[in-house]
Image 1 (tube, helix red, strand yellow):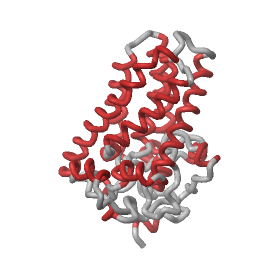
Image 2: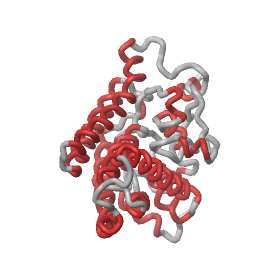
Image 3: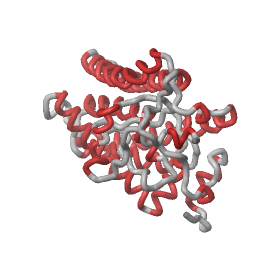
Image 4: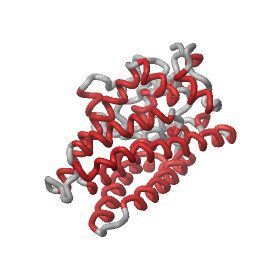
Length: 300
């Protein structure tokens, strides 16, 4: 029986011989991450720290902690990037960060017209509401990107790799990042959420984006029915399209509500990537991946 076949059983993914500390780490990491996000957001808002500096520093911290976790408790050691992959994953990461930053320019141009100087609700309530609205907008756009042929030409670049890890979370088409980030941020702006609320939600979304993509053997248990995690996102990347729901990368409640929730304890994909690998260039062909959506010979 293959490793993937073993993981579709009802047995825990964690091998019986794994050290006790590793089993504990797989259970406590996510609650600690959530507590860190809440604590950092509260401190930055209360102490009037520079939100841009805090977000950038937090990105470095979350990447470092998850890369370490991938070494300590990997889900699949074969999914760890090789030296060649690290090189082109790095290029994609730079492109993704640049595209994400560029998407903020038109939003910031109108930010002052819609954003009140103070939260219109108690800050804690507004943060929760902003999180729900932003999560729903992201879910809707992500799901549409899988059903609309034009958007899939862009988003499909992200699904080319046959492994799921922190490093290849940045494998994206730049226009996919631009459109996704712009759509979510613009919805939040139009709703009039305050800058502190958008900042706090941004920390959560940033952490979730890398966490769900991490090659880590983390168990969320019942938390899976509220928050998204790696167990769900691996199914999203499954070549078996019957498993590949889970369009929410932060909250799983929308997948439950709109019937795209497929996870159950012990369920895991036998393979990840594209069901038709020939429909997109390989990830190491970065220029081809960027130009490919414009090709007249594009096919699914």
